[in-house]
Structures are given as structure tokens and as C-alpha cells.
Length: 159
Ligand code: HEC
Image (cartoon, rainbow, N blue to C red; front, top):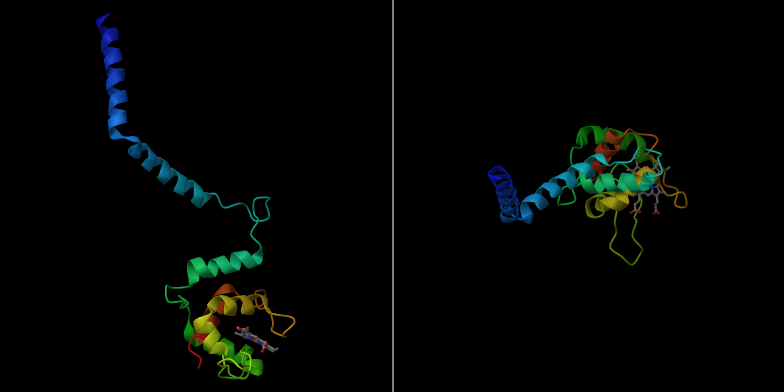
């Protein structure tokens, strides 16, 4: 009899303690668990859950991993980027990137350097996926990711 009473007291104690600890203690734990699950929830490439297009994935990478808060490319080897730029981009864009002006005639001129500094998403999209209509090549299958990062970093130093 006594022991049954002790048991129910213990149960009462635990329940009350749980309530006193508050919902927040449990919610906190759930929050951590939710984050952990999200981190491992990346769908298998090519599976039905893998709905990001290649374009989406490349652009997301730029936003989440490659840009600092000032829009500068992180982790670029500028010297290597310069070498790649001179080999691959100079023939069309010129050594200083100023052969094509991307602005309309009534706007302030904008060259590769301006695009890379002021609008890296456009720059990044263009060097990855090109623009057939305008005659710009797609480089996503030509260069490893790190080379494109190096080129983008160097381009931000152009006039
Ligand atoms: C075969 C010639 C050619 C080569 C090589 C080339 N481009 Fe282009 N690029 C173009 C043309 C043409 C355009 C469109 C110009 C226009 O519309 O005024 C363009 C557009 C761009 C744009 C778009 C800018 C904007 O704001 O719309 C970027 C960025 C760019 N090129 C970067 C590069 C980089 C970096 C390289 C080297 C990895 C490169 N291009 C190599 C021809 C080339």
C-alpha cells in the first residue's frame, strides 16, 4: 500500500518537475533534433526528392557558400584566376575585360569588373551557364568549380 503510494508520488513529482522545467526545455531539444535532421536530409542526387535543377544548386552554392557579406567571392586564388582569365576570356572580353560594355547606350558603362563587383549572381550565372543568344559560353562543364571561383575572384579586381 505504502509503496504504491510512493510510486504515485514519484510519478506526480516527475510530471510536475517536467511541467516546471517547462515546455521550452523539450522544445529546445526538438529544435536541435530538427536542425540535425535537416542537415542529413539532403536527397540522393537524381532521386524524386532531388528537385533542385543544376542551375538552382549552383546559384544556391554562390549565395550560401561563396559570397561574403559585401558580395566578395571567398576562397579565390586571384593569381590563378588571372591566368585562367587571360587564357580563356581575353580573346573576347579583352585583357582588362572592357571590350564589351554590358550597359545600354544611355546607361553608365558596365564591364566585366563592374558586373563581378556589383552583381555577382549575374556574373556567376553567365560564366556557369552562358547565354547562347548573346554568344557567351557556358563553363560549368569546362572548368572545375575551384577554377570558376578563382576566375570570379579575379574578375572582381578588373577595372
Ligand atoms: C567566344 C567569346 C567569349 C568568351 C571566350 C567569353 N565570353 Fe563572356 N561574353 C561574350 C559575349 C558575346 C557576351 C555578351 C555581350 C553582350 O551582350 O554585350 C558575354 C557576356 C559575358 C558576361 C555577362 C555580363 C552581363 O552582365 O550580362 C559575363 C559575366 C562574361 N561574359 C564573363 C566571361 C568570362 C569570365 C569568360 C572567361 C571564363 C568569358 N566571359 C569568356 C563572349 C565571350
